[in-house]
Length: 73
Ligand code: SF4
Ligand code: SF4
Image 1 (cartoon, rainbow, N blue to C red):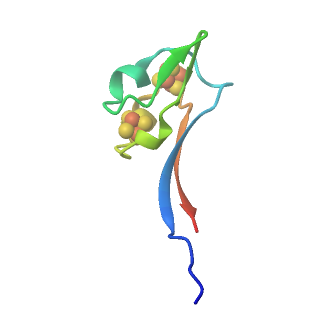
Image 2: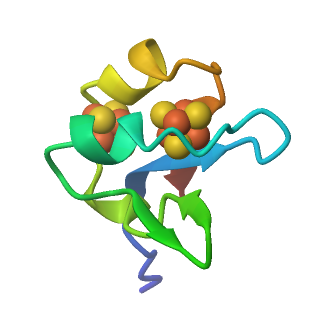
């Protein structure tokens, strides 16, 4: 009998470093604590906690945030 791994769906958050102005708006907006500022740059360190509310995507003043579904089979 062949056992296959379960398919999982994850949400990935990405910040374009060329667009990001380090405003920290996303840190204040995200209720899941996805974003943190380290060494002077904001990064989505906790992307796996994202609940896909799209607030960051909508309100980033530099339109630097992309969000996407990833299907792992
Ligand atoms: S809100 Fe946008 S510009 Fe501001 S730190 Fe986050 S990604 Fe960068
Ligand atoms: S989509 Fe919502 S939960 Fe996900 S990173 Fe953006 S603000 Fe946070």
